[in-house]
Amino acid sequence: MTKTAITPTREQNYPEWYQQVISAADLAENSAVRGCMVIKPWGYAIWELIQKDLDRRFKKTGHVNAYFPLLIPLSYLEKEAEHVEGFAKECAVVTHHRLVPNGKGGLKPDGELEEPFVIRPTSETIIGESFSKWVKSYRDLPLLVNQWANVMRWEMRTRMFLRTSEFLWQEGHTVHATDEEAIIETKQMLDVYSDFVQDVLAMPVIKGEKPCFERFPGAVNTYSIEAMMQDCKALQAGTSHFLGQNFARASNIQFQNKNGEMETAWTTSWGVSTRMICGLIMTHSDDNGLVLPPRIAPQQFVIQPIYRTDEQREAVLAYCKRLKQDLEDQQFARDDIRVHIDDRDIQGGAKSWEWIKKGVPVRIEVGARDLENNSVMIARRDNVGQKESLTHAALVSGAIKLLTEIQDNLFAKAVEFRNSKMQNVASVAEFNQFFSGDANVDNGFAVAYAVDETCIEDFIKPLKVTARCMPLADNDISGICIFTGKAANRKMVFAKSY
RNA sequence: CGGGGCGUAGCGCAGCUUGGUUAGCGCACUUGUUUUGGGAACAAGGGGUCGUGAGUUCGAAUCCCACCGCCCCGACCA
Image (cartoon, rainbow, N blue to C red; front, side):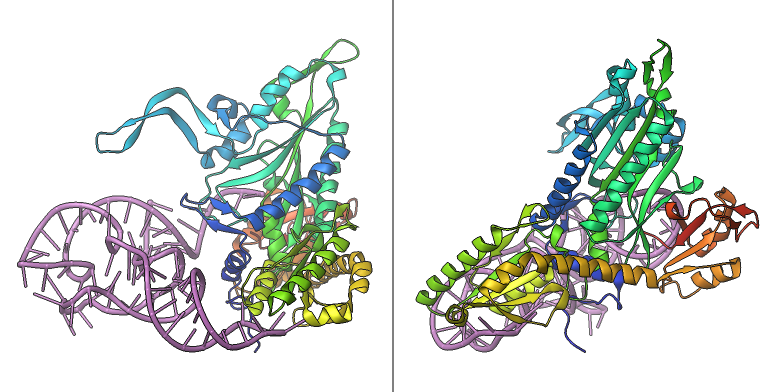
Protein backbone atom coordinates (compact mmCIF):
# COMPACT_ATOMS: atom_id res chain seq x y z
CA MET A 1 0.00 0.00 0.00
CA THR A 2 1.57 3.26 -1.09
CA LYS A 3 1.36 6.27 1.16
CA THR A 4 -1.24 8.81 0.12
CA ALA A 5 -1.15 12.52 0.84
CA ILE A 6 -4.77 12.51 1.98
CA THR A 7 -6.13 10.35 4.77
CA PRO A 8 -8.62 8.88 4.80
CA THR A 9 -8.74 7.81 1.17
CA ARG A 10 -11.87 8.11 -0.97
CA GLU A 11 -12.62 4.49 -0.42
CA GLN A 12 -12.19 4.61 3.34
CA ASN A 13 -14.39 7.64 4.03
CA TYR A 14 -15.51 9.75 1.12
CA PRO A 15 -17.06 12.69 3.04
CA GLU A 16 -14.06 13.00 5.31
CA TRP A 17 -11.70 12.72 2.32
CA TYR A 18 -13.56 15.62 0.70
CA GLN A 19 -13.01 17.86 3.73
CA GLN A 20 -9.36 16.88 3.90
CA VAL A 21 -8.78 17.73 0.23
CA ILE A 22 -10.19 21.22 0.81
CA SER A 23 -7.94 21.72 3.78
CA ALA A 24 -4.83 20.21 2.15
CA ALA A 25 -5.29 22.31 -0.98
CA ASP A 26 -5.89 25.39 1.15
CA LEU A 27 -9.11 26.21 -0.67
CA ALA A 28 -11.25 27.29 2.27
CA GLU A 29 -11.81 26.98 5.98
CA ASN A 30 -14.74 27.11 8.34
CA SER A 31 -15.41 30.47 9.88
CA ALA A 32 -16.67 31.51 13.28
CA VAL A 33 -20.07 32.05 11.66
CA ARG A 34 -22.12 28.89 11.57
CA GLY A 35 -22.36 27.43 8.10
CA CYS A 36 -20.27 30.13 6.47
CA MET A 37 -16.82 29.50 5.04
CA VAL A 38 -13.77 31.62 4.45
CA ILE A 39 -12.70 31.16 0.84
CA LYS A 40 -8.90 31.29 0.85
CA PRO A 41 -6.79 32.69 -2.00
CA TRP A 42 -6.29 29.39 -3.85
CA GLY A 43 -10.02 28.65 -3.72
CA TYR A 44 -10.99 32.19 -4.59
CA ALA A 45 -8.63 32.17 -7.57
CA ILE A 46 -10.60 29.21 -8.94
CA TRP A 47 -13.84 31.14 -8.43
CA GLU A 48 -12.34 34.15 -10.24
CA LEU A 49 -11.47 31.97 -13.21
CA ILE A 50 -15.00 30.57 -13.21
CA GLN A 51 -16.40 34.11 -13.13
CA LYS A 52 -14.13 35.34 -15.86
CA ASP A 53 -14.98 32.56 -18.27
CA LEU A 54 -18.70 32.51 -17.59
CA ASP A 55 -18.96 36.28 -17.69
CA ARG A 56 -17.46 36.29 -21.16
CA ARG A 57 -20.04 33.73 -22.26
CA PHE A 58 -22.90 35.76 -20.75
CA LYS A 59 -21.75 38.92 -22.51
CA LYS A 60 -21.36 37.03 -25.75
CA THR A 61 -25.01 35.95 -25.54
CA GLY A 62 -26.11 39.55 -25.04
CA HIS A 63 -26.36 39.85 -21.27
CA VAL A 64 -25.23 42.79 -19.16
CA ASN A 65 -24.29 42.91 -15.47
CA ALA A 66 -26.06 44.92 -12.79
CA TYR A 67 -26.33 44.79 -9.02
CA PHE A 68 -29.38 44.68 -6.78
CA PRO A 69 -29.68 45.04 -2.98
CA LEU A 70 -28.85 42.34 -0.49
CA LEU A 71 -31.97 43.10 1.56
CA ILE A 72 -35.43 42.33 0.30
CA PRO A 73 -38.56 43.77 1.89
CA LEU A 74 -40.56 40.93 3.36
CA SER A 75 -43.61 41.94 1.36
CA TYR A 76 -41.76 41.36 -1.96
CA LEU A 77 -41.13 37.75 -1.09
CA GLU A 78 -44.79 37.27 -0.31
CA LYS A 79 -45.87 38.17 -3.83
CA GLU A 80 -45.46 34.77 -5.45
CA ALA A 81 -47.21 32.05 -3.46
CA GLU A 82 -45.07 29.02 -4.38
CA HIS A 83 -41.92 31.08 -4.06
CA VAL A 84 -42.74 32.10 -0.47
CA GLU A 85 -43.49 28.54 0.45
CA GLY A 86 -40.24 27.33 -1.08
CA PHE A 87 -37.95 29.80 0.62
CA ALA A 88 -39.74 30.87 3.83
CA LYS A 89 -38.10 28.11 5.88
CA GLU A 90 -34.57 29.17 5.08
CA CYS A 91 -34.51 32.96 5.26
CA ALA A 92 -32.36 35.08 7.53
CA VAL A 93 -34.40 38.09 8.63
CA VAL A 94 -33.19 41.56 9.54
CA THR A 95 -35.49 43.04 12.17
CA HIS A 96 -33.48 45.88 13.76
CA HIS A 97 -31.26 48.70 12.56
CA ARG A 98 -29.31 49.76 15.64
CA LEU A 99 -27.35 48.40 18.60
CA VAL A 100 -27.44 49.79 22.12
CA PRO A 101 -25.62 48.80 25.34
CA ASN A 102 -27.36 45.92 27.07
CA GLY A 103 -26.24 46.99 30.53
CA LYS A 104 -23.94 43.96 30.88
CA GLY A 105 -21.05 45.36 28.88
CA GLY A 106 -22.41 44.06 25.59
CA LEU A 107 -24.81 45.18 22.91
CA LYS A 108 -28.38 44.39 22.03
CA PRO A 109 -30.48 45.13 18.95
CA ASP A 110 -32.65 48.20 19.10
CA GLY A 111 -34.77 50.19 16.70
CA GLU A 112 -37.13 47.55 15.42
CA LEU A 113 -37.96 47.89 11.75
CA GLU A 114 -41.53 48.49 10.73
CA GLU A 115 -41.16 45.94 7.93
CA PRO A 116 -38.43 43.34 8.35
CA PHE A 117 -35.95 42.69 5.54
CA VAL A 118 -35.01 39.28 4.30
CA ILE A 119 -31.42 38.63 3.26
CA ARG A 120 -31.84 37.50 -0.35
CA PRO A 121 -32.05 33.74 -0.80
CA THR A 122 -32.37 34.59 -4.54
CA SER A 123 -33.36 37.84 -6.18
CA GLU A 124 -36.37 37.19 -8.43
CA THR A 125 -38.66 39.41 -6.41
CA ILE A 126 -36.45 42.44 -5.91
CA ILE A 127 -35.18 42.34 -9.48
CA GLY A 128 -38.77 41.97 -10.67
CA GLU A 129 -39.59 45.20 -8.85
CA SER A 130 -36.96 47.04 -10.87
CA PHE A 131 -37.85 45.30 -14.10
CA SER A 132 -41.46 46.42 -13.80
CA LYS A 133 -40.20 49.99 -14.02
CA TRP A 134 -37.68 49.31 -16.78
CA VAL A 135 -40.10 47.56 -19.10
CA LYS A 136 -42.74 49.73 -20.75
CA SER A 137 -42.70 48.80 -24.41
CA TYR A 138 -42.03 45.77 -26.59
CA ARG A 139 -39.00 47.82 -27.67
CA ASP A 140 -37.50 47.34 -24.18
CA LEU A 141 -37.44 43.60 -24.70
CA PRO A 142 -35.72 41.29 -24.35
CA LEU A 143 -34.14 42.52 -21.12
CA LEU A 144 -31.07 40.38 -20.40
CA VAL A 145 -29.46 41.02 -17.01
CA ASN A 146 -27.05 39.11 -14.81
CA GLN A 147 -25.71 39.79 -11.34
CA TRP A 148 -22.74 38.35 -9.47
CA ALA A 149 -23.68 38.27 -5.82
CA ASN A 150 -23.83 36.46 -2.54
CA VAL A 151 -27.05 34.94 -1.25
CA MET A 152 -28.02 33.35 2.02
CA ARG A 153 -30.09 30.29 2.74
CA TRP A 154 -30.29 29.12 6.34
CA GLU A 155 -29.35 25.50 5.78
CA MET A 156 -29.60 22.84 8.46
CA ARG A 157 -26.48 20.94 7.52
CA THR A 158 -23.63 22.63 5.73
CA ARG A 159 -20.45 21.47 4.04
CA MET A 160 -17.86 23.69 2.40
CA PHE A 161 -18.62 24.52 -1.24
CA LEU A 162 -21.41 21.93 -1.34
CA ARG A 163 -23.89 23.73 0.83
CA THR A 164 -23.06 26.79 2.89
CA SER A 165 -25.42 29.29 4.47
CA GLU A 166 -23.90 32.10 2.47
CA PHE A 167 -22.67 31.35 -1.02
CA LEU A 168 -21.42 33.19 -4.06
CA TRP A 169 -23.20 32.81 -7.35
CA GLN A 170 -24.45 34.51 -10.44
CA GLU A 171 -28.11 34.86 -11.18
CA GLY A 172 -29.36 35.77 -14.62
CA HIS A 173 -32.80 37.33 -14.95
CA THR A 174 -34.40 37.99 -18.30
CA VAL A 175 -37.69 39.34 -19.61
CA HIS A 176 -39.21 38.43 -22.96
CA ALA A 177 -42.22 39.33 -25.06
CA THR A 178 -43.22 35.74 -25.79
CA ASP A 179 -43.08 32.37 -24.10
CA GLU A 180 -41.21 30.85 -27.07
CA GLU A 181 -38.46 33.41 -26.74
CA ALA A 182 -38.19 32.88 -22.97
CA ILE A 183 -37.98 29.12 -23.41
CA ILE A 184 -35.24 29.52 -26.01
CA GLU A 185 -33.35 31.71 -23.54
CA THR A 186 -33.81 29.16 -20.75
CA LYS A 187 -32.37 26.40 -22.90
CA GLN A 188 -29.63 28.58 -24.34
CA MET A 189 -28.31 29.31 -20.84
CA LEU A 190 -28.45 25.63 -19.98
CA ASP A 191 -26.22 25.08 -23.01
CA VAL A 192 -23.89 27.85 -21.88
CA TYR A 193 -23.56 26.14 -18.49
CA SER A 194 -23.11 22.72 -19.95
CA ASP A 195 -20.43 23.91 -22.42
CA PHE A 196 -18.58 25.74 -19.68
CA VAL A 197 -18.70 22.90 -17.17
CA GLN A 198 -17.60 20.29 -19.68
CA ASP A 199 -15.00 22.34 -21.58
CA VAL A 200 -13.48 24.24 -18.67
CA LEU A 201 -14.14 22.20 -15.54
CA ALA A 202 -13.89 18.93 -17.51
CA MET A 203 -16.99 17.63 -15.76
CA PRO A 204 -19.40 15.59 -17.88
CA VAL A 205 -23.02 16.58 -17.32
CA ILE A 206 -26.46 15.49 -18.39
CA LYS A 207 -28.70 18.30 -19.57
CA GLY A 208 -32.30 17.74 -18.67
CA GLU A 209 -35.62 18.99 -17.47
CA LYS A 210 -36.50 18.61 -13.80
CA PRO A 211 -39.58 16.52 -13.03
CA CYS A 212 -42.54 18.56 -11.78
CA PHE A 213 -41.86 17.77 -8.12
CA GLU A 214 -38.28 19.06 -8.28
CA ARG A 215 -39.01 22.45 -9.85
CA PHE A 216 -37.78 25.79 -8.55
CA PRO A 217 -40.56 27.34 -6.43
CA GLY A 218 -42.65 29.42 -8.80
CA ALA A 219 -41.16 28.12 -12.04
CA VAL A 220 -43.13 26.61 -14.91
CA ASN A 221 -40.13 24.56 -15.94
CA THR A 222 -36.73 23.96 -14.44
CA TYR A 223 -33.76 22.64 -16.37
CA SER A 224 -30.52 21.46 -14.84
CA ILE A 225 -27.16 19.96 -15.57
CA GLU A 226 -26.44 16.87 -13.49
CA ALA A 227 -22.96 15.55 -12.79
CA MET A 228 -21.79 12.34 -11.15
CA MET A 229 -19.30 12.47 -8.32
CA GLN A 230 -16.73 9.75 -7.60
CA ASP A 231 -18.94 8.24 -4.90
CA CYS A 232 -21.59 7.87 -7.62
CA LYS A 233 -23.87 10.47 -6.15
CA ALA A 234 -25.46 13.09 -8.36
CA LEU A 235 -24.69 16.78 -8.04
CA GLN A 236 -26.83 19.48 -9.60
CA ALA A 237 -24.25 21.79 -11.13
CA GLY A 238 -26.48 24.49 -12.55
CA THR A 239 -30.11 25.39 -13.14
CA SER A 240 -32.09 27.41 -15.64
CA HIS A 241 -35.74 28.23 -15.04
CA PHE A 242 -38.57 29.17 -17.36
CA LEU A 243 -40.75 31.21 -15.01
CA GLY A 244 -43.67 31.65 -17.39
CA GLN A 245 -45.67 34.72 -16.37
CA ASN A 246 -45.75 33.86 -12.66
CA PHE A 247 -43.17 36.37 -11.52
CA ALA A 248 -44.07 38.94 -14.17
CA ARG A 249 -47.61 38.86 -12.85
CA ALA A 250 -46.44 39.06 -9.22
CA SER A 251 -44.12 41.99 -9.96
CA ASN A 252 -46.36 43.54 -12.60
CA ILE A 253 -43.92 43.39 -15.49
CA GLN A 254 -46.07 44.51 -18.42
CA PHE A 255 -45.36 46.04 -21.79
CA GLN A 256 -47.27 47.59 -24.62
CA ASN A 257 -47.14 45.53 -27.79
CA LYS A 258 -47.07 46.79 -31.37
CA ASN A 259 -50.84 47.11 -31.34
CA GLY A 260 -50.77 49.29 -28.25
CA GLU A 261 -52.21 46.56 -26.01
CA MET A 262 -50.83 45.73 -22.56
CA GLU A 263 -49.29 42.29 -22.23
CA THR A 264 -47.72 40.47 -19.31
CA ALA A 265 -44.08 39.56 -19.98
CA TRP A 266 -42.37 36.16 -19.73
CA THR A 267 -39.32 35.76 -17.52
CA THR A 268 -36.44 33.36 -16.90
CA SER A 269 -33.77 32.99 -14.26
CA TRP A 270 -30.65 30.87 -14.17
CA GLY A 271 -27.74 30.41 -11.81
CA VAL A 272 -24.57 28.62 -10.88
CA SER A 273 -22.72 28.94 -7.60
CA THR A 274 -19.56 28.14 -5.71
CA ARG A 275 -21.03 24.65 -5.56
CA MET A 276 -19.34 24.10 -8.91
CA ILE A 277 -16.07 24.04 -6.99
CA CYS A 278 -17.49 21.15 -4.97
CA GLY A 279 -18.20 19.35 -8.22
CA LEU A 280 -14.74 20.12 -9.50
CA ILE A 281 -13.16 18.64 -6.37
CA MET A 282 -15.36 15.56 -6.24
CA THR A 283 -14.98 14.81 -9.95
CA HIS A 284 -11.22 14.88 -10.41
CA SER A 285 -9.42 14.77 -7.10
CA ASP A 286 -7.62 11.67 -5.89
CA ASP A 287 -6.03 10.33 -2.71
CA ASN A 288 -3.16 12.77 -3.13
CA GLY A 289 -5.42 15.81 -3.09
CA LEU A 290 -6.93 18.24 -5.53
CA VAL A 291 -6.56 17.67 -9.27
CA LEU A 292 -7.23 20.75 -11.39
CA PRO A 293 -7.97 20.75 -15.10
CA PRO A 294 -5.50 23.26 -16.63
CA ARG A 295 -8.21 25.66 -17.79
CA ILE A 296 -9.33 26.27 -14.20
CA ALA A 297 -5.95 26.01 -12.46
CA PRO A 298 -4.79 29.29 -10.85
CA GLN A 299 -1.28 28.22 -11.81
CA GLN A 300 -0.80 25.80 -14.69
CA PHE A 301 2.93 25.35 -14.19
CA VAL A 302 4.84 25.65 -10.95
CA ILE A 303 8.61 25.83 -11.27
CA GLN A 304 10.68 24.55 -8.35
CA PRO A 305 14.27 25.76 -8.45
CA ILE A 306 16.78 23.36 -6.90
CA TYR A 307 20.20 24.58 -5.80
CA ARG A 308 22.74 24.42 -2.99
CA THR A 309 24.92 27.47 -3.14
CA ASP A 310 24.21 31.15 -3.67
CA GLU A 311 25.96 31.09 -7.05
CA GLN A 312 23.83 28.16 -8.13
CA ARG A 313 20.74 29.93 -6.86
CA GLU A 314 21.40 32.94 -9.04
CA ALA A 315 22.00 30.88 -12.15
CA VAL A 316 19.09 28.54 -11.56
CA LEU A 317 16.68 31.39 -10.85
CA ALA A 318 17.75 33.22 -13.98
CA TYR A 319 17.06 30.05 -15.97
CA CYS A 320 13.65 29.65 -14.27
CA LYS A 321 12.66 33.23 -15.04
CA ARG A 322 13.53 32.74 -18.69
CA LEU A 323 11.46 29.58 -18.76
CA LYS A 324 8.54 31.32 -17.05
CA GLN A 325 8.68 34.12 -19.60
CA ASP A 326 8.84 31.70 -22.53
CA LEU A 327 5.76 29.88 -21.23
CA GLU A 328 3.84 33.04 -20.37
CA ASP A 329 4.36 34.40 -23.86
CA GLN A 330 2.00 31.71 -25.11
CA GLN A 331 -1.75 31.52 -24.82
CA PHE A 332 -3.80 28.56 -23.72
CA ALA A 333 -7.59 28.83 -23.93
CA ARG A 334 -7.47 32.59 -24.66
CA ASP A 335 -5.29 33.38 -21.65
CA ASP A 336 -1.59 33.76 -21.07
CA ILE A 337 -0.24 30.55 -19.64
CA ARG A 338 -0.07 30.89 -15.85
CA VAL A 339 3.33 30.10 -14.32
CA HIS A 340 4.61 30.44 -10.79
CA ILE A 341 8.17 30.12 -9.52
CA ASP A 342 8.19 28.76 -5.98
CA ASP A 343 11.48 29.88 -4.52
CA ARG A 344 10.49 29.50 -0.89
CA ASP A 345 13.22 28.16 1.33
CA ILE A 346 11.54 24.93 2.35
CA GLN A 347 12.36 21.28 1.89
CA GLY A 348 12.01 20.16 -1.73
CA GLY A 349 9.85 17.16 -1.00
CA ALA A 350 7.47 19.12 1.17
CA LYS A 351 7.24 21.77 -1.52
CA SER A 352 6.43 19.19 -4.19
CA TRP A 353 3.69 17.64 -2.13
CA GLU A 354 2.18 21.00 -1.39
CA TRP A 355 1.64 21.67 -5.10
CA ILE A 356 0.46 18.14 -5.69
CA LYS A 357 -2.18 18.62 -2.99
CA LYS A 358 -3.14 21.95 -4.54
CA GLY A 359 -3.72 20.21 -7.86
CA VAL A 360 -1.31 22.13 -10.10
CA PRO A 361 -1.35 20.39 -13.51
CA VAL A 362 2.39 20.44 -14.15
CA ARG A 363 5.34 20.85 -11.82
CA ILE A 364 8.73 21.70 -13.27
CA GLU A 365 11.93 21.03 -11.35
CA VAL A 366 14.98 22.97 -12.43
CA GLY A 367 18.35 22.13 -10.93
CA ALA A 368 21.97 22.95 -11.59
CA ARG A 369 22.34 19.87 -13.79
CA ASP A 370 19.55 21.13 -16.05
CA LEU A 371 21.44 24.32 -16.77
CA GLU A 372 24.26 22.32 -18.30
CA ASN A 373 21.93 20.19 -20.43
CA ASN A 374 19.40 22.93 -21.14
CA SER A 375 16.77 20.57 -19.76
CA VAL A 376 13.96 20.47 -17.20
CA MET A 377 12.20 17.75 -15.22
CA ILE A 378 8.43 17.73 -15.42
CA ALA A 379 5.81 15.88 -13.39
CA ARG A 380 2.13 15.78 -14.35
CA ARG A 381 -0.57 15.90 -11.68
CA ASP A 382 -2.72 13.44 -13.58
CA ASN A 383 0.12 10.95 -13.31
CA VAL A 384 1.73 11.31 -9.88
CA GLY A 385 4.99 9.42 -9.55
CA GLN A 386 6.08 9.79 -13.16
CA LYS A 387 8.77 12.28 -14.02
CA GLU A 388 10.06 13.12 -17.44
CA SER A 389 13.15 15.00 -18.55
CA LEU A 390 12.64 17.36 -21.45
CA THR A 391 14.71 20.02 -23.13
CA HIS A 392 13.77 23.58 -22.36
CA ALA A 393 12.81 24.02 -26.02
CA ALA A 394 10.64 20.92 -26.11
CA LEU A 395 8.73 21.98 -23.00
CA VAL A 396 8.12 25.47 -24.32
CA SER A 397 7.04 24.38 -27.78
CA GLY A 398 4.92 21.54 -26.40
CA ALA A 399 3.31 23.45 -23.52
CA ILE A 400 -0.05 24.09 -25.13
CA LYS A 401 -0.28 20.54 -26.36
CA LEU A 402 0.60 19.29 -22.88
CA LEU A 403 -2.08 21.37 -21.17
CA THR A 404 -4.64 20.38 -23.78
CA GLU A 405 -3.75 16.74 -23.30
CA ILE A 406 -4.18 16.94 -19.51
CA GLN A 407 -7.48 18.79 -19.89
CA ASP A 408 -8.79 16.20 -22.36
CA ASN A 409 -7.47 13.32 -20.32
CA LEU A 410 -9.32 14.44 -17.19
CA PHE A 411 -12.55 14.89 -19.09
CA ALA A 412 -12.23 11.51 -20.79
CA LYS A 413 -11.55 9.82 -17.46
CA ALA A 414 -14.61 11.45 -15.89
CA VAL A 415 -16.83 10.50 -18.84
CA GLU A 416 -15.63 6.93 -18.71
CA PHE A 417 -16.32 6.71 -14.99
CA ARG A 418 -19.77 8.27 -15.32
CA ASN A 419 -20.74 5.99 -18.20
CA SER A 420 -19.57 2.91 -16.34
CA LYS A 421 -21.95 3.77 -13.48
CA MET A 422 -24.96 4.58 -15.63
CA GLN A 423 -27.45 1.91 -16.52
CA ASN A 424 -30.84 1.51 -18.15
CA VAL A 425 -33.46 -0.14 -15.98
CA ALA A 426 -36.61 -1.64 -17.45
CA SER A 427 -38.73 -2.48 -14.42
CA VAL A 428 -39.42 -1.54 -10.82
CA ALA A 429 -37.69 -4.77 -9.78
CA GLU A 430 -34.54 -3.81 -11.65
CA PHE A 431 -34.82 -0.31 -10.25
CA ASN A 432 -35.06 -1.59 -6.68
CA GLN A 433 -32.20 -3.96 -7.24
CA PHE A 434 -30.04 -1.18 -8.66
CA PHE A 435 -30.50 0.90 -5.51
CA SER A 436 -30.92 -1.85 -2.94
CA GLY A 437 -27.27 -2.32 -2.02
CA ASP A 438 -25.63 -1.26 1.19
CA ALA A 439 -26.53 2.34 2.01
CA ASN A 440 -22.88 3.25 1.76
CA VAL A 441 -22.40 1.73 -1.66
CA ASP A 442 -23.86 3.95 -4.30
CA ASN A 443 -24.86 2.62 -7.62
CA GLY A 444 -24.80 5.58 -9.92
CA PHE A 445 -27.40 6.72 -12.41
CA ALA A 446 -30.39 4.59 -13.31
CA VAL A 447 -32.18 5.61 -16.49
CA ALA A 448 -35.77 4.56 -17.06
CA TYR A 449 -38.95 5.47 -18.87
CA ALA A 450 -41.11 7.38 -16.42
CA VAL A 451 -44.03 9.74 -16.45
CA ASP A 452 -43.54 13.24 -15.09
CA GLU A 453 -46.00 12.84 -12.23
CA THR A 454 -45.75 13.30 -8.47
CA CYS A 455 -46.87 9.74 -7.82
CA ILE A 456 -43.51 8.27 -8.79
CA GLU A 457 -42.06 9.83 -5.66
CA ASP A 458 -43.76 7.03 -3.75
CA PHE A 459 -41.53 4.52 -5.50
CA ILE A 460 -38.25 6.33 -5.13
CA LYS A 461 -38.41 8.09 -1.77
CA PRO A 462 -38.21 4.95 0.38
CA LEU A 463 -34.94 4.10 -1.38
CA LYS A 464 -33.61 7.62 -0.74
CA VAL A 465 -33.34 8.03 -4.45
CA THR A 466 -34.15 11.26 -6.26
CA ALA A 467 -35.29 11.97 -9.81
CA ARG A 468 -32.50 14.07 -11.25
CA CYS A 469 -33.82 15.08 -14.64
CA MET A 470 -35.38 14.04 -17.91
CA PRO A 471 -32.49 14.23 -20.38
CA LEU A 472 -33.15 16.53 -23.31
CA ALA A 473 -31.31 14.07 -25.52
CA ASP A 474 -34.09 11.52 -24.98
CA ASN A 475 -36.91 13.80 -26.08
CA ASP A 476 -39.82 12.42 -28.09
CA ILE A 477 -39.35 8.74 -27.62
CA SER A 478 -41.99 6.28 -26.63
CA GLY A 479 -42.06 3.64 -23.95
CA ILE A 480 -43.86 2.52 -20.83
CA CYS A 481 -43.32 4.12 -17.45
CA ILE A 482 -41.71 1.47 -15.23
CA PHE A 483 -43.60 2.72 -12.18
CA THR A 484 -47.12 3.40 -13.42
CA GLY A 485 -47.38 1.38 -16.62
CA LYS A 486 -48.60 4.48 -18.41
CA ALA A 487 -47.27 5.57 -21.77
CA ALA A 488 -44.14 7.70 -21.30
CA ASN A 489 -42.39 9.80 -23.91
CA ARG A 490 -39.44 10.71 -21.72
CA LYS A 491 -36.74 8.95 -19.82
CA MET A 492 -35.74 9.99 -16.33
CA VAL A 493 -32.37 9.79 -14.58
CA PHE A 494 -32.49 8.58 -10.97
CA ALA A 495 -29.71 8.69 -8.41
CA LYS A 496 -28.81 9.23 -4.83
CA SER A 497 -27.77 12.82 -4.60
CA TYR A 498 -26.19 15.62 -2.66
C1' C B 1 -36.35 20.26 16.94
C1' G B 2 -35.33 14.50 18.30
C1' G B 3 -30.92 10.92 19.12
C1' G B 4 -25.38 10.53 20.02
C1' G B 5 -20.53 12.88 20.96
C1' C B 6 -17.00 16.80 22.10
C1' G B 7 -14.87 21.71 24.16
C1' U B 8 -7.07 21.64 27.14
C1' A B 9 -1.28 25.97 22.35
C1' G B 10 -2.47 27.35 15.24
C1' C B 11 -4.13 21.91 14.29
C1' G B 12 -4.73 16.87 16.39
C1' C B 13 -4.91 14.83 21.18
C1' A B 14 -3.40 12.82 26.50
C1' G B 15 -4.27 14.06 31.59
C1' C B 16 -10.09 13.88 34.68
C1' U B 17 -12.23 7.67 37.04
C1' U B 18 -8.89 8.24 42.51
C1' G B 19 -8.25 16.86 43.24
C1' G B 20 -1.92 18.06 44.98
C1' U B 21 5.10 20.23 42.08
C1' U B 22 6.07 24.83 37.15
C1' A B 23 -0.42 21.30 32.60
C1' G B 24 1.98 17.40 28.83
C1' C B 25 2.65 14.93 23.82
C1' G B 26 2.66 14.86 18.16
C1' C B 27 2.40 18.10 13.97
C1' A B 28 3.14 23.21 12.71
C1' C B 29 6.20 27.73 14.03
C1' U B 30 11.35 30.35 15.34
C1' U B 31 16.89 29.82 15.60
C1' G B 32 21.39 26.94 14.67
C1' U B 33 24.15 22.80 12.41
C1' U B 34 24.20 18.92 8.90
C1' U B 35 21.12 17.86 4.68
C1' U B 36 18.59 18.83 -0.19
C1' G B 37 16.30 15.93 -7.96
C1' G B 38 9.56 12.88 -4.19
C1' G B 39 6.92 14.21 2.58
C1' A B 40 15.07 15.26 6.22
C1' A B 41 17.88 14.59 11.14
C1' C B 42 19.62 16.57 15.62
C1' A B 43 19.68 20.50 19.20
C1' A B 44 17.68 24.80 21.45
C1' G B 45 13.34 27.95 21.78
C1' G B 46 8.37 30.66 21.51
C1' G B 47 3.34 29.92 22.21
C1' G B 48 -2.21 28.10 27.30
C1' U B 49 -7.19 33.11 31.23
C1' C B 50 -7.74 24.04 30.42
C1' G B 51 -15.39 26.91 26.54
C1' U B 52 -18.03 30.64 30.26
C1' G B 53 -20.01 31.58 35.10
C1' A B 54 -21.02 30.26 39.95
C1' G B 55 -19.92 26.56 43.85
C1' U B 56 -17.28 22.54 47.15
C1' U B 57 -12.06 22.66 48.98
C1' C B 58 -6.14 24.68 52.18
C1' G B 59 -5.84 23.51 46.90
C1' A B 60 -9.93 22.34 40.77
C1' A B 61 -8.23 20.93 33.83
C1' U B 62 -9.91 17.05 37.43
C1' C B 63 -15.71 16.99 41.81
C1' C B 64 -21.04 19.51 41.71
C1' C B 65 -24.57 22.99 39.24
C1' A B 66 -25.99 26.26 35.36
C1' C B 67 -25.05 28.31 30.74
C1' C B 68 -22.64 28.79 25.90
C1' G B 69 -20.54 26.74 21.59
C1' C B 70 -19.24 22.97 18.06
C1' C B 71 -19.49 18.16 15.45
C1' C B 72 -22.12 13.65 13.74
C1' C B 73 -27.07 11.05 12.48
C1' G B 74 -32.51 12.48 10.71
C1' A B 75 -36.45 16.21 8.25
C1' C B 76 -35.01 20.97 4.38
C1' C B 77 -31.84 22.38 0.16
C1' A B 78 -27.98 26.00 -5.55
